[in-house]
Amino acid sequence: MKKKDLLKLKSLIMAGVMMSSLSACSKDNSESKEDNKSNYSIVVMENNKAIIYDISNYNNSNDEISIWYDFESSLKNKEVIIPASKAFIFRDENHHEEALKFAYYYCDDVIMYNDLMDHSLEDIKDQKLNLCK
Picture (cartoon, rainbow, N blue to C red):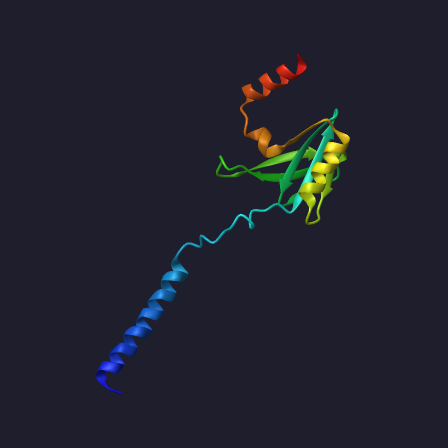
């Protein structure tokens, strides 16, 4: 091999090494929405009202279920504790749709926890007062 060919080969090897080290050090932005997809739906019913939680994980103790909910507006997860006696957990691949069907069958008022948390306290109070009139 000629010196020129060796220099080209060396530069190609160096470029490959640099590219692999750069990709190893870069932040992985490949997190898709499917990674954040929920694995479970929990329906909590009381007084003809239902609230649905779409979550990825939960802990179940004797009389309560602890879930950690990721709020988009907050940097950290918040724990929500719900009574196990009023909770119905759906686990299969159609968990969200089945939870909605179940909740609408048994309750007149159904809301998603995300939707509830998107409103301010004043909006919720006003809506509740308007429904009572």
